[in-house]
Length: 113
Ligand SMILES: [Zn+2]
Image (cartoon, rainbow, N blue to C red; front, side):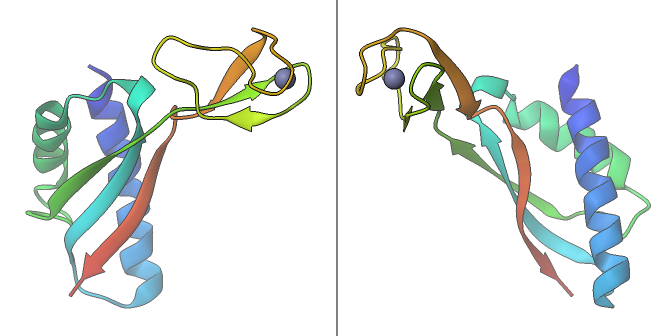
């Protein structure tokens, strides 16, 4: 269950944020996650809630945002947003592309108290 390791990572970020910003607790936070990661929102919710139970982020609301995929052509370095199953560079027409976005999990914004 990779949602658990994601939750661990998120909680670590939130805790250091609370420390450095002189706030009491986190009430809400937004996570932007690439579509390709295939996160199950409910699983992440449950994992985070159980992990955060005794922390500054206990009961915080988790908002998950999906980020679409960005590909980069390995031939001409052109970046583009590929179609669902159309991974062809629009600039040089090579099918030599690599996914560079849509594969990350980022803590985007946090609401504190
Ligand atoms: Zn290209």
